[in-house]
Image (cartoon, rainbow, N blue to C red; front, side, top):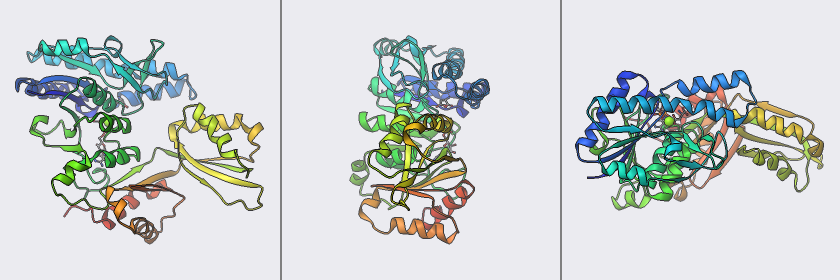
Length: 415
Ligand code: ADP
Ligand code: ASP
Ligand code: MG
């Protein structure tokens, strides 16, 4: 008998038939004698619709009210799924996040989970009940509803698995595992049987939305065994048909050869901001990025251009597209102190990244990326690197072309 947390994404619970299908999967795991807790997303499209309404009412909306609205999608699916299970003879009940509670910090729209009280839930599970928990939402210290950022249900599931000390966390989605790149963009993408936490973390943070970044971080820190698999296949999680996210040692212990590059990620969620003619003196970068950090805006890639006249320079950086308006507004407010000439914003950009732990021990990986892009006539606007990834910012219209060319260049194409 194992204790498993099952998470179902939006497409998997996208209509009533699919909710019934999900209930059958849960029942199959219960019938095998497993102790099961379930986390579910809102129906596919539901959260997008809620976000759209919020933006129509007020583009620079109050983050607390945003959460009140967008957290509602998951309330619908937990109730429906609990009913579907009851109809199939499984004891189930829904638990809203404030009923558990799932405690988060107060960073509305991108809150972090700080604690989950599982004693009552564990007791219910021992008594044969399946708890159905809404992903994506939590409870702030002030007692307000929070949300965890788009795709946050993955994080809810992994956090619950860690808190329940579950043997495994199965993330059911609409693809049968983690691929070398998004299989919807590159037909020749290959499924990976095992991926390391580190690589998965980079892939997720560079835009592979199959898992939310924070969920991988949590899995890595709490040693949660995560499996990504499809809710549309016949197999259930205990058959282990998907991609396992594991420690590098576990892969090495099997004597498997790791390829230098294991995956390619891309993100169109980027926006580029250039602040022109800021003073080229100590403290300016801090003066620009300080206010953004205070506003909870993450800055990703940064370049400071060479100062032409020795006194002023341009600083270019990227933020998430959803943060663009807020970032520009915040910088405009700081203009009296910063004394820059202007702010240029560009949303016609995308970030493409190659990722692999093999990069640590191989040279020439970056060169191959630059040559491949050059051969396609794709201009690189900003570059950033870490030990196991290289990212470039390119014009958005070249995203697919760049990803496909790199996938071939690093010999990732399926036969
Ligand atoms: P869910 O609603 O189940 O959370 P998501 O849409 O968030 O599903 O994530 C699944 C999607 O992630 C897939 O449909 C696929 O298009 C996309 N994806 C991006 N990169 C990858 C990758 N490397 N491997 C698998 N899927 C990927
Ligand atoms: N429903 C939320 C979203 O669409 C959370 C999730 O699906 O993971 O972002
Ligand atoms: Mg998702």
